[in-house]
Image 1 (cartoon, helix red, strand yellow):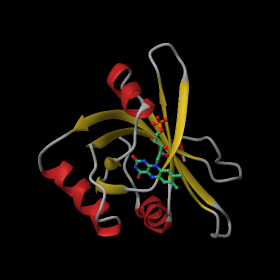
Image 2 (image 1 turned 60 degrees about the horizontal axis):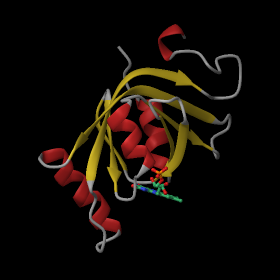
Image 3 (image 1 turned 90 degrees about the vertical axis):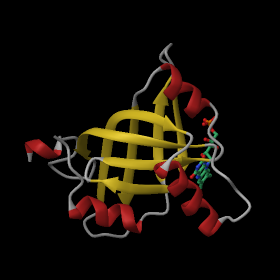
Image 4 (image 1 turned 180 degrees about the vertical axis):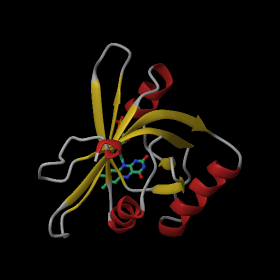
Length: 138
Ligand SMILES: Cc1cc2nc3c(=O)[nH]c(=O)nc-3n(C[C@H](O)[C@H](O)[C@H](O)COP(=O)(O)O)c2cc1C
C-alpha cells in the first residue's frame, strides 16, 4: 500500500500549493491549484473545498484524483504525485478540521466541504532516473 514517507511529508509541509487533477465522466480533464491541504494519516490527505466547482462535480461523477506536489528549492529538486479515490465530507471531524485550517488564514471564508483523498499510489516526479516510478518500485 502507498504510504506518505517522511521525505514526502517534508515536501508537503514546505509547499504553498498543490496541482489537483480530476476528470469528468466524459473524460474531460481539470486541474486547479489548491492551497488548503492537510495530512490526515500515512495514506489520507484532506483538501478544503472553498471554491471548487468543476473539481467537485468531477469527484461526484467520477471519483478519481491525481495530486502533484514539488519542492523548487531542494537540490536536487523533489516532486511526488499521488493518485487515489476522493470522497466528500460536509460534516463531522474532518469537515471541522477543514473549517479550522481555512479560518486560521482566512477568517471570512467557510469551506463547503472537505475532500478526503485515499491515496492508492504514489509516484516520483523528481527529475532523474526514478522519474515516473511508483515509490514501491524503488
Ligand atoms: C493559489 C491558489 C490557491 C487556491 N487554493 C484553493 C483551496 O485551497 N481550496 C479551494 O477550494 N480553492 C482554491 N483555489 C481556487 C481553485 O484553484 C479553483 O479556482 C476552484 O476550484 C474553481 O475551479 P474548478 O471549477 O475547476 O474546480 C485556489 C486558487 C489559487 C490560484
